[in-house]
Length: 183
Image (cartoon, rainbow, N blue to C red; front, side, top):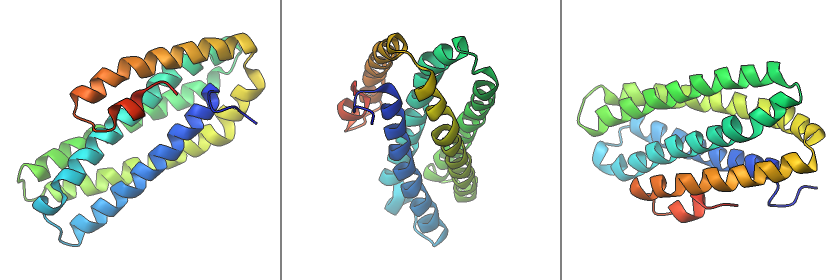
């Protein structure tokens, strides 16, 4: 069993957080399509956009700047290449969702269509991607990482989370210290 501070355990925890975010996002899309207006959904949608963007961004940095370089040294290149490609697709999907949500919140009549469908696509891509990491990458990491690798990852994760905290606070996230603080 992994201790709570283990970097791979943290990544699993990030996935749990993202699943909850994606669930809230689906509810918002359903409510908008059922006729809920901008005034009713504005605060929730703005928070969902910012949180998803920030959480996906931080999680990707933890993997891309922390876990992936170490696993590459251990020869896990093909899987990492696939996951990096998916990270780019997910970032583009989050940007599409963010743009469409911004249009809708700004009063564009068709903006709902421009954010609900990208939100669903991001949800699908992220869900598939997280399953791949949970079932393939993280178990491979657990088999591969040495104690020195884990120590390096702990340091990298603390630094990356610490770097993200001021950005989250600047974006006005009320839970920024809890979500961005080192785990």
